[in-house]
Length: 229
Image (cartoon, rainbow, N blue to C red; front, side, top):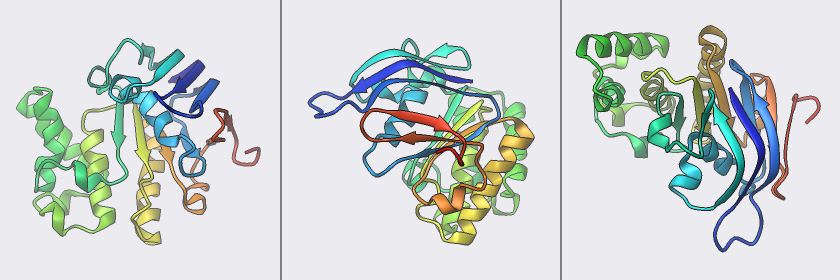
């Protein structure tokens, strides 16, 4: 599903290489933790997968990255939107609507999806993420965990094959974090979605993941089981 082949990345005026000669493959239907200290390059790895790096951020990229058979070198993020969905660290900053249902439908509206198809997909993700009772709520009145679920739903409604999340539990209490991670685990196993989560709070996520990508911070990446890493 995701393949890095001899990938290296350095940003302009940077003092070190962010990633150096990295090669690995993430299979379809895997739940992967992206782990490393602050500043190691976890967010850069996520942005490489959806094409934000280097198309929007700049940087010198060598090697090849493919997602579902598509090259991120030749396709910009908008052209990968049907394959890769990304949820940022503070989803509330990315919301464009006030009402839950409108926020979830927004992505489909921008794609010009037919109204009957749009209604069906919105209903499906509302049900999938247990948001149906909240569909008419103002997003600002929701808890952090509920807002995170809305952000995931708004990404899932376009039916991506890969879901990327940047520290999705950082602002959540342990109960809300467990709820969000359990939902992600279910999406992997029920839908065959490939999920990659960058996360600092390892004790929350380690029980759910299949494998770990360790970003060492010196350019090296290591992919393996939790036990090995």
